[in-house]
Length: 165
Image 1 (cartoon, helix red, strand yellow):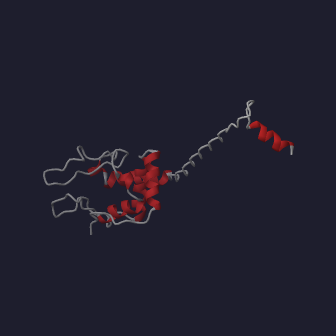
Image 2: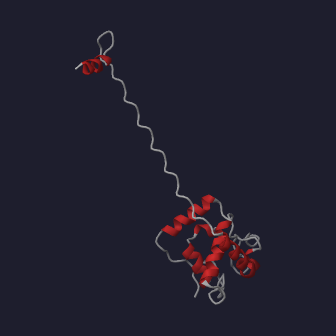
Image 3: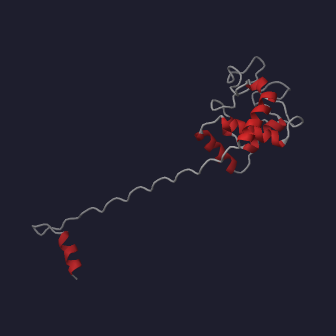
């Protein structure tokens, strides 16, 4: 009973008028820490760099920097090979999409020629080679881009635009 009286009196001023004390605002819920990124296998990255150097570097550059002016179509309407480092858009695609593009080739939607923009490598690279090249690409990306790309891996598969075959 004493506790109730104290609580009731605490709301009254000396002049007898009731005072309303605002309740404290709830503190915002802290954002959950993002899940840790999958660890890259150093062996896969090294093998991927080697396969990349032998197969992809001629077009995409020795350090995955892409062709100069890769955002500008050439005289035939083709976009030059893009970079695979942070400055490009490779990190926006899931592993499955990247593997599909590497295996089957790709036609850029703006390509006005009968050839594929990127040739298929399904007759030259094994599934393991392709997985290793993708691991190499991931080693070139910031944590932010790797996190975004990992989210793409968790989504349902989508059709790759311009897919070759």
